[in-house]
Image (cartoon, rainbow, N blue to C red; front, side, top):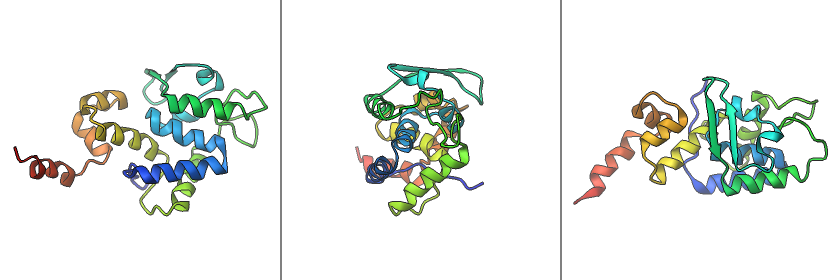
Amino acid sequence: MECVEPIRNKKQIKAIKHYLKKQNLRDYLLFVLGINSGLRISDLLLLKVSDVKEKDRVVIREKKTGKIKDFPLSDICKVTINEYLSTVNDQSDWLFKSKKGDRPITRVQAYRIINRAARAIGMTEAIGTHTLRKTFGYWAYQSGVDVIKIQKLLNHSAPSVTLAYIGITKDELDSIYINLNL
């Protein structure tokens, strides 16, 4: 399995969002919710409409860890959820319903959606479903959130695991020494 990276360029995030919104609102929501929640794809795909409709918070049991995950929805997530749900006639249980029946899309389908969008905007980096979770962590770190808090949000065992996971390179850490100049 190829190791995927976070999306480190906000212009690329914006371009993917634009591309997906034109293609399919469900897929756009998948991307927006993925990069703004830090959920694993296994948890994201199992979301039900009732988990998010007219809600300020999402409370689920993580599939991998069995732990309760409770987090607030950002404004962009709420707007995107409402926009998508206003277009859905059929009241399926699944938020990311498959076109082939009353079940969620598969991990493979989610991978194809994300990868196709990345390629469509010219990205060549290794991109996959885990890119969404890594992008959440990366941009939280870039915005100044303490790595210990990100570690807790992503349920990692140590800060070093989180830094490696979100793709903070030695060069990025070295640049702190070079640019500080007190």
